[in-house]
Image (cartoon, rainbow, N blue to C red):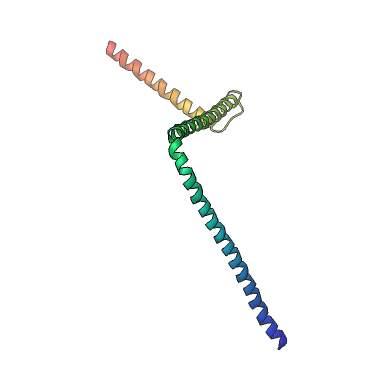
Amino acid sequence: MADHHLQNTQPMTHQMVKAATAATAGGSLLILSGLILAGTVIALTIATPLFVIFSPVLVPALIATALLATGFIASGGFGVAAVTVLSWIYRYVTGRHPPAADQLDSAGMKLASKAREMKDRAAQLTGAAAS
Protein backbone atom coordinates (compact mmCIF):
# COMPACT_ATOMS: atom_id res chain seq x y z
CA MET A 1 0.00 0.00 0.00
CA ALA A 2 2.92 2.32 0.70
CA ASP A 3 4.23 1.72 -2.84
CA HIS A 4 0.85 2.64 -4.30
CA HIS A 5 0.77 5.92 -2.30
CA LEU A 6 4.34 6.72 -3.41
CA GLN A 7 3.44 6.21 -7.07
CA ASN A 8 0.50 8.62 -6.85
CA THR A 9 2.46 11.39 -5.13
CA GLN A 10 5.50 11.21 -7.39
CA PRO A 11 3.63 12.28 -10.58
CA MET A 12 1.83 15.00 -8.61
CA THR A 13 5.18 16.31 -7.31
CA HIS A 14 6.61 16.16 -10.79
CA GLN A 15 3.64 18.17 -12.11
CA MET A 16 4.07 20.72 -9.34
CA VAL A 17 7.75 21.16 -10.23
CA LYS A 18 6.83 21.57 -13.91
CA ALA A 19 4.18 24.16 -13.07
CA ALA A 20 6.54 26.09 -10.79
CA THR A 21 9.28 26.06 -13.44
CA ALA A 22 6.84 27.23 -16.12
CA ALA A 23 5.47 29.98 -13.89
CA THR A 24 8.98 31.16 -13.01
CA ALA A 25 10.13 31.15 -16.63
CA GLY A 26 6.93 32.83 -17.84
CA GLY A 27 7.06 35.47 -15.12
CA SER A 28 10.72 36.19 -15.81
CA LEU A 29 10.06 36.61 -19.52
CA LEU A 30 7.04 38.82 -18.80
CA ILE A 31 9.14 41.06 -16.54
CA LEU A 32 11.92 41.17 -19.15
CA SER A 33 9.48 42.16 -21.90
CA GLY A 34 8.06 44.90 -19.65
CA LEU A 35 11.55 46.26 -18.99
CA ILE A 36 12.35 46.24 -22.70
CA LEU A 37 9.09 48.06 -23.46
CA ALA A 38 9.85 50.67 -20.81
CA GLY A 39 13.39 51.10 -22.12
CA THR A 40 12.07 51.50 -25.67
CA VAL A 41 9.57 54.15 -24.60
CA ILE A 42 12.24 56.06 -22.66
CA ALA A 43 14.71 55.86 -25.56
CA LEU A 44 12.06 57.02 -28.02
CA THR A 45 11.13 59.91 -25.71
CA ILE A 46 14.77 61.00 -25.53
CA ALA A 47 15.48 60.46 -29.24
CA THR A 48 12.36 62.13 -30.69
CA PRO A 49 13.58 65.71 -30.20
CA LEU A 50 16.90 64.71 -31.78
CA PHE A 51 15.07 63.22 -34.76
CA VAL A 52 13.07 66.43 -35.17
CA ILE A 53 16.18 68.61 -34.94
CA PHE A 54 18.27 66.49 -37.29
CA SER A 55 15.51 65.42 -39.72
CA PRO A 56 16.67 67.82 -42.47
CA VAL A 57 19.96 65.91 -42.40
CA LEU A 58 18.75 62.42 -41.56
CA VAL A 59 16.06 62.07 -44.25
CA PRO A 60 18.35 62.93 -47.20
CA ALA A 61 21.11 60.82 -45.64
CA LEU A 62 18.72 57.89 -45.32
CA ILE A 63 17.58 58.30 -48.93
CA ALA A 64 21.18 58.52 -50.15
CA THR A 65 22.15 55.46 -48.12
CA ALA A 66 19.20 53.49 -49.48
CA LEU A 67 20.07 54.47 -53.06
CA LEU A 68 23.71 53.61 -52.51
CA ALA A 69 22.86 50.21 -51.03
CA THR A 70 20.43 49.50 -53.87
CA GLY A 71 23.10 50.43 -56.40
CA PHE A 72 25.68 48.16 -54.81
CA ILE A 73 23.24 45.25 -54.63
CA ALA A 74 22.15 45.74 -58.25
CA SER A 75 25.75 46.08 -59.39
CA GLY A 76 26.72 42.88 -57.61
CA GLY A 77 23.73 41.04 -59.05
CA PHE A 78 24.49 42.17 -62.59
CA GLY A 79 28.17 41.27 -62.09
CA VAL A 80 27.27 37.75 -60.99
CA ALA A 81 24.89 37.42 -63.94
CA ALA A 82 27.58 38.62 -66.37
CA VAL A 83 30.17 36.19 -65.01
CA THR A 84 27.63 33.36 -65.23
CA VAL A 85 26.75 34.20 -68.83
CA LEU A 86 30.40 34.55 -69.85
CA SER A 87 31.20 31.22 -68.18
CA TRP A 88 28.30 29.57 -70.02
CA ILE A 89 29.42 31.05 -73.36
CA TYR A 90 33.01 29.89 -72.76
CA ARG A 91 31.84 26.34 -72.02
CA TYR A 92 29.57 26.40 -75.09
CA VAL A 93 32.31 27.65 -77.41
CA THR A 94 34.88 25.17 -76.08
CA GLY A 95 32.41 22.30 -76.57
CA ARG A 96 31.90 21.36 -72.92
CA HIS A 97 28.11 21.19 -73.44
CA PRO A 98 26.66 23.54 -70.78
CA PRO A 99 23.03 23.25 -69.64
CA ALA A 100 20.44 24.10 -72.34
CA ALA A 101 23.01 23.95 -75.17
CA ASP A 102 20.76 21.53 -77.07
CA GLN A 103 17.84 23.94 -76.82
CA LEU A 104 20.05 26.76 -78.10
CA ASP A 105 21.21 24.66 -81.05
CA SER A 106 17.62 23.64 -81.83
CA ALA A 107 16.44 27.26 -81.69
CA GLY A 108 19.32 28.31 -83.97
CA MET A 109 18.39 25.65 -86.53
CA LYS A 110 14.71 26.68 -86.45
CA LEU A 111 15.70 30.33 -86.89
CA ALA A 112 18.01 29.51 -89.81
CA SER A 113 15.28 27.40 -91.43
CA LYS A 114 12.73 30.23 -91.13
CA ALA A 115 15.28 32.72 -92.49
CA ARG A 116 15.85 30.49 -95.54
CA GLU A 117 12.09 30.18 -96.04
CA MET A 118 11.65 33.95 -95.85
CA LYS A 119 14.56 34.49 -98.26
CA ASP A 120 13.07 32.02 -100.76
CA ARG A 121 9.62 33.58 -100.38
CA ALA A 122 11.04 37.09 -100.91
CA ALA A 123 12.91 35.87 -104.00
CA GLN A 124 9.69 34.38 -105.38
CA LEU A 125 7.73 37.56 -104.75
CA THR A 126 10.37 39.87 -106.24
CA GLY A 127 10.78 37.51 -109.23
CA ALA A 128 7.00 37.48 -109.79
CA ALA A 129 6.79 41.26 -109.46
CA ALA A 130 9.65 41.82 -111.90
CA SER A 131 7.99 39.73 -114.66
